[in-house]
Amino acid sequence: MTFVYVLVSNEKDTYYEQTMISASSLLAHNKGAQVVILVDQGTAATFTGKRTYHNKIDIQICEIQVPEEYNNRDRSRFLKTTMYHYIDEDFLFIDGDTLVCEELKSDFSEDISIGMVLDRHQKISEGSYQNFYEERSKPLHWSAGYQDLHFNSGVIWVKKSPAAQKFFDEWHKLWKETLEKYSVVYDQTALNEVNVRQGGIVKEIDGTWNCQVTRRSSFLKHLNCAKIMHYYASFGLTCFDLADKNIQKSILEKTHEKLDAILANPKIAFSSVQDVNADLISVKVQRTAFYRTIVFMYKRLKPIYRTIDKICGLIIRK
Image 1: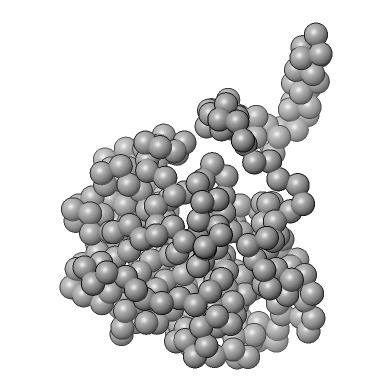
Image 2: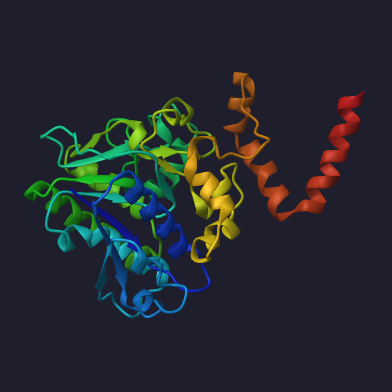
């Protein structure tokens, strides 16, 4: 089995550092594993100076020519939806903002051509993202998922087969269609629509393969036995220590004590203060549009947020 990453990056982001950390953690637990990182021509041109860490570890860089007119975001999606054609054997795709926690054995059932973990470890009807899925899919006249299942594309098991090739070809076609016709980048939405059109070719694999450490998720039940932790670095400030960009950047320095401590025991690498909602009322409130509005105001409209918070404080005291 080959392990595959997709990397589109420049000196202004930390995608390179994230991917190097993930690949290093993979090789630490899987000695001699075949690791391939697919990059575009723009990313390959940045591999100078400190951005040559990949030469220190046993990985293969595969440069793919991507249309010049694409921005970095779209180049990444281009590579992800076409990666099937660049790998010669069964492979496991892994997002860059991940940590591998143990040896990864390809013990998937023979009848699985494409395998993924449910998004946020929940069926569509069980979680709080049903409206989100539908808001993206309905304008395109697509489905939110197949038989109440919406899959996360952060980790994908791929068995080389005509069925898998058909899946990727249709995925790339739909992604490209949304980009050109609607100027949206819903690659995961497109992936789940392909699954519907192909009658559920995507099979659910155990949540430990993509333990999604994110809010309003059921990740806790998979954390203890997690094979791969997906910590969503793109979300900015999170409770997982490795989301700190300064810690990510330290991989390119001579010493990185904080990073080493995280890699030594990633399953406890969380901030000292977390709010685990033991009461289901809080969980239900967090699933409302009202709660999302409060979070939006805190991030973008802090003066208004502070005023409303003071008023609420006066009301509650009474």
